[in-house]
Amino acid sequence: MSNVGLLRLLQLQTKQRSMCNLTLCLLLFLTSSCSSLSTCPALCLCESTVVNCESQNLTSVPHPLPENTTTLNLNGNNISNLNSASFPRPLVHLTHLYISGSQLKELDSMAFQNLPSLRLLDLSDNRISQFSIEALHRDNTIEVLNFSKCLFNHSYIGVFADLFRHSLPKVSRLDLSNNDLVFLPEGIFTGLSELSLLDLRNNSLVSIRNVTFQNRALKELDLRDNAFKALPNETLSELSSIPNLRVRLAGNPWRCDCDIEEMLIWLEQHDFVMDRLNLTCASPNELKHTQLVHLEHSQLPCWSNNMDELNRVLEPSYVFLGLVLALIGVIFLLVLYLNRKGIKRWMYNIRDACRDHMEGYHYRYEINSDPRLANLSLNSDV
Image (cartoon, rainbow, N blue to C red; front, side, top):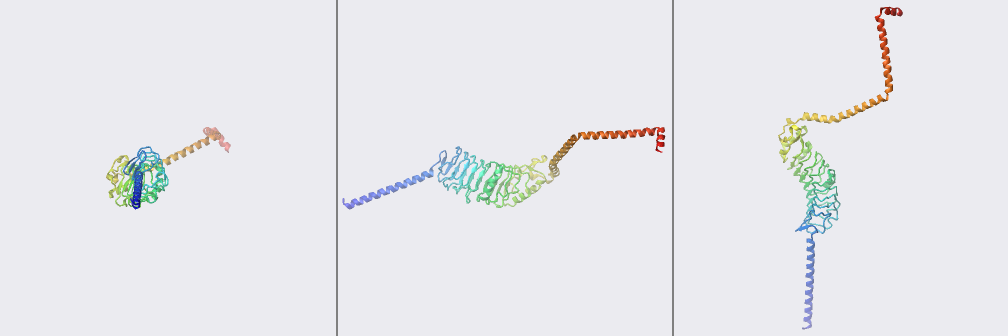
């Protein structure tokens, strides 16, 4: 074989080796990429793009999570805190995050910064006392929030109030049920411009007087099983002004007196209360279980209730008056006790004066009854 042939053979072998090396490198790269996408954390079950780590007694978010994860279930664990280290790598495909019943207490700044595509966040059944408004980036896309039974106690509603006003521009469904709320901070929902469903069931709300739904996007409002006795006129007017709204009000202890008269008229004029047939009187006893829609205005015991209200108002006054009189009596008895000697001397003086006076009357009577003493008395006077 000539030298030229040998040279060509060597070049061909070199090219073949280069192609093999390139193919091998490409295979290694693809293998590593696939392994990084499909790596499943310990104690978790991965199916397609769903990672299920439910009830594994985890104390933190498990790592590493597959980059293609779309749904992460962390329900029923013991994760008390979420911070910037909880999701250290961007999970751009994660849309559904469930952390229900995980003893969660604190959500620090930057906790969800690496979850730019998050649509649903379930934090129900926790005991949250701290929620930084910087836990979510300003342009987040969260649409569904489940905060049912998640507040440490009802006074922590202010923790979420700032969050609602500034950090949730896309939320359309909000669940605040089962939090034992007794009030709602003024303007708490004004920043939720796309809110269409609001669930406030099973709280202890007595009024929503200071709540304003300025967005007019609300379609469903659930106020069942609270502590409403009547809805004030401004609340009725506000609810009437929201188009296509559906309201649920059953399970409240409605007090059927003069204060509910405007609400009865409102129920007659509007049909967007979905459970209006289930609204019944809780008091007074003679109207208990009577349906509000079948209640006649003449049946409202306004006078007797007004008297009861007056008595309830006056009861503290009676108690105060009794205490004042008792105090005066104690002071009077104390003064008498401290001046007992002087009082005794004063009583003796009065007794002696009365005795002298009675003796004088007795002497004059004896003189007047004896004619001889009477003549003597006249001569003595002359």
